[in-house]
Structures are given as structure tokens and as C-alpha cells.
Length: 466
Image (cartoon, rainbow, N blue to C red; front, side, top):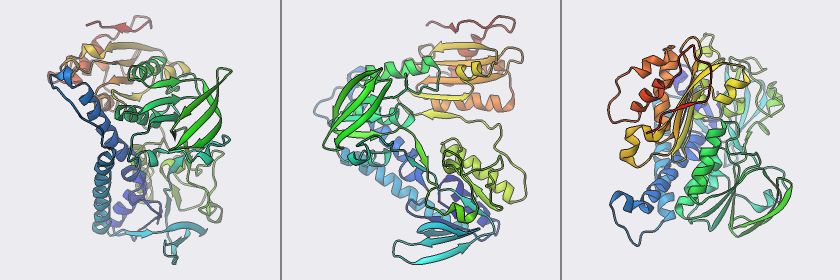
């Protein structure tokens, strides 16, 4: 029995049903979970529309003249909705083919391994399971700032449903969601002000990454305010807003028409009767799990965002594999797994393994190689030369400790390095590989050619100038 039809839960149900187990998934609204309905895939759909709009603005650069073009936001939304509808149909078909039962309604534990489900029509059904998987996800955090909740701000859900271009969008949060949607809305034509409480964007990443993203946004006409904390909100999102804020000790006032909140995530663990099931939570509200994703209640598991796993769909899918194997009698853990990620700005930022910041915090010595994206010849054919890639190499074993890319197709590039890291290959295997010309992966050759000799001391990055 699975509470919530997100990535890990639905795959657990489908897969175990195919082994002959009787399975049921309880879902209150979004068939398939957040990713195909309101998060990953819809946002990337809208972001791609915004990228197409940016190409229109740059059309003369590619030898194409233009006139009288405009953004049709209802059409942008319809394209996204059509994709979502197709994904929902695909999920329903997979439920049918697997034999897993989909139960629509709000679920709540009423005892150990017992969940009461109330449908939208008010009917009540009691389900019990030998194994129960909690997969309730997370939601956008609305901080207790005076006036913020009353202003009815947009979250990513409402932002992806807009049928008009906001005149002036104020974005709270310089993390992944805030960055992606700020750039998209700017490219559709909004005036955008991005407000980040920390001293820099994506503040947990390396300084050069934060600086590169900051410069990108300023170049695109996005106003970026760092070290800024909102103290009061007045007005209503979609009409008129006044934000009082503290910036480096000085009071400032911001005005806008729309407000998007992207300051973090809150696990959906309240109101589902965890106490009745004997399931404990952490201080941050996540379901408490061990490395096998077992909760404090026997036979009850938790996966994905609600369990405190890194908030990525691909990690939730790995949670499914851990729980599946353990339910089937195996001994699988989450310890030490890789966590690749990509921020879908344009250009993208992606990383696998350690950043320089993390390596220094752990006291790990490394050799650094770094090249500008303009050194990758494919970028010149695309007129997409912004950015850089860098790699951290172990000082003795030649293993790749970490790899970061800020550049076009970054999310695709890191996969090849990740496979090499999984295989334990030395960096020279990538340096000496034969990659097709001209492709983005070809850039790995000049990058890894820049790795300092093992006997050389760690120093400033060696940069290949082209």
C-alpha cells in the first residue's frame, strides 16, 4: 500500500504488482505525483517556450529577420497542459497494465498499517497493507513573514498556469526554482526582480558558479538583490504589491504586480496521522528513516521528499529501487550514492560529485582543471559560448572527485563524467577518449588535458584561452 503517487511510490506499486503482489496507491489529486503534473516536466516545458522566445529576440544574429511577433501566454499554457494530459494518460495506462489499483482520495493513517481514504464525493474506505510506503512529497514553503500568506503569492504551481505575462514579477528565492522561473518570465517579457536572503545566488555552490549566474541574470535585464530579507508584504499578487525589506542593514521598499515564492520546501507529513501509525518525524518535519528507508514503524517505509531525500525526481526513483529490493528480501541502502543535478537556466548549470567548497570543507586535496566553454568548438557553431567547465581530480589516484558545468547542454555533459566516476576510471580515460566532432562532449578532452601533474601542488585553476 502506497500513500502518494509520486515517483518512488508509483514505481514501487507497478513493479511489485507485476511480481504478483496485491498493491494499491492512494492519491488525492495528481496522478503520477508532482513531477509530471506541476513540477519538473511542466516547468521544463514552459522554460523551453521561453528559450524559443529568446531565439526570436536574437533572430538577426542567426540571419533571420522578424517583425510583429508576440508572446501568447494562453498558447504557452496550453502546450504545457497538453503535455501533462498525455503524461496522466500514460500513468493511467501503466496502472492498468501493472495491475496496481489507483485509489483517488485523501489518505490518513488510523492505526498501524491502516489508512482511511476519503474520496472527493465523501465516501470512506479503509485499507490495510503488509507493507506501507509513505510518498507524500513536499510543497512550497510560505514563510511567516507578515502579510505574505495574505498576499496570495504564486508558487511554482500557479506560475506555470499563468495566462498572461506579469508586468513586474517579484521572486523570493535565488535557488533552483527561483532562478529557472525568473529567467523564463523575463524572456516572456516581464520585468523581474529576484530577491535572495543570502549573500549570493545558489549560495551553497562555488563562488564562480554564483557569480556566473548573477552576471547572466544582469545581462538579461533581471534585477538581482542579494543579502535582502523581506520584513512585510502589503497588497495582493496579481494586482499591486509593496514589499518592505532589509538589505545589508538598510530598509528598502519594492513594488511589483506579482509575487512568486520559491524559498524552500516543506514536507507533506502533517495531517496524515503518522502518530497513529507509530511513525516518527525529524525536527524538520520529515519522516524519520534509516539508510534502508525504514521508518520507526515495522513494515512502513518512506521515500522521496517527505523522507528528507535530496529533492530530485531521479533520487526518488533510486529510493524506489532501495525499497523494492528491501521488500523483496534484499539489503539495499542509500548511503554513498551519487546525486547529480541540473539547474535548467539557459545556459544550464549541472554538477556531479564534489564542488570545490565541499572538498575544502572535507579537507580533501585536489587538482583543478578549468576551461571556458568558448574552448569547446561546438559552442561557437551554436552562438552559445557563455560559461565554463571544471573538474576536481584526486591528488594521488587520478580519480575524478567532482565535475561542474555552467554552459549549454550541461545536464547532458555531466552524464559521461558520472559514468566514468561510477566505473572508477582515471581522468585520463576521458582525456584520451575519441569523441565525435563537433559535439559538447569533445570539450572533455581539452578540460582533462589541463589537469596539473600529480606531483604539482594545488594552485589556481589553469585556464585554456581560446
